[in-house]
Structure formats: C-alpha cells, structure tokens
Image (cartoon, rainbow, N blue to C red; front, top):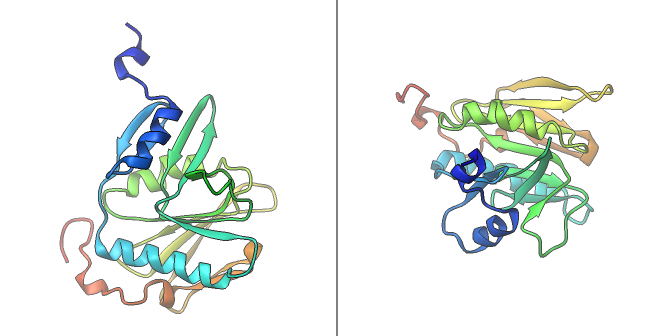
Length: 199
C-alpha cells in the first residue's frame, strides 16, 4: 500500500465542496485536510480591526479586503494548498462564485501561541512564494507589535518591525496605512494570556 493510499488523500474538488457545508473550517495541504482550532476574542478583535481599517481606506477602489472566511490557494512545487489567513488584500480578485483567492498582495495572520510555529514557519514560507505578494503581516496579540515581511526591489522579503501604538505601517502599493493604535483598538493587554499561560 502506498503512502497516498494510507493517508486517503482528498481531492481539491471534494475539499472545496465540503468546505461550503462544513461547520468547521479546514486547511488543505496537498490532499491532507486539517481542522482549524477556534480563536480567542482578542485574536478576533485584532483581525477585525485589520480588515475593517483597510477596507474603509480601499472603499471605491479596485483592491478589496477579505476576512478569515476566504481561503488563499497556493501552488507550491507539485502541491496545491489552501489556507485561511486572518485577512488579505486582493487587487485581482477571483470570480465572485469562487471560495478562494489566488492573487493576494497583502496577507495577514494574527499570531497566537497555538499558531505561532505555523504562522512564522510553514505559512510564511508558502505565502512568500506568491508572485504578486508585497507584504506578509504577522500581528502579535500580547503587545502592540507587528512584523511585516515586505518584498524588496530584488524580490526578496525583508522583515520590518513596528512596535508601540504610535507606530504606523505604510502599504504604499495599495495606498493605505495602518496605525497600531487603531489595529489594537479596545485590546486590553493586561488581560491577554502570555504564551506560558500567565496573564
């Protein structure tokens, strides 16, 4: 028996159809399907701030913001993957009936203790292969800190760190900016659990 038979790989078509009716979201890595865990209130608060602040700035313009209910399809090597980022900006959207996007220019993940290794490792490595991507945004939940992996002139990605509520992230390619004071609006850091489980 081959490894593929043992894993009982799911076709892309079956995965996409199943996601339309599933009460639980799943990510898809080359035929293997993984259920996603739920998120905390602070995680959702920050993700909502990211999408709404950028969506307001992009109103009436070609680029659009999508939240965590829209997947990204990434083809890496001989494998197709689908991820649900916490937010993204797309300037060449897929057809309206699709449940995924192929051409994000900005992708954001809100980092939590359970997702940090994936967000900073696997997902970062895959997202940075997207040809039109200009920025991958990693947003912390325990303090006002954001790391932006930004595409440079030589097509490599360089990390930029923004700390403190006075910091402002510019997204020149889409004509937007994001103030950390707005991104973390109504977030009580004193109540956020640290990665070791202490407040």
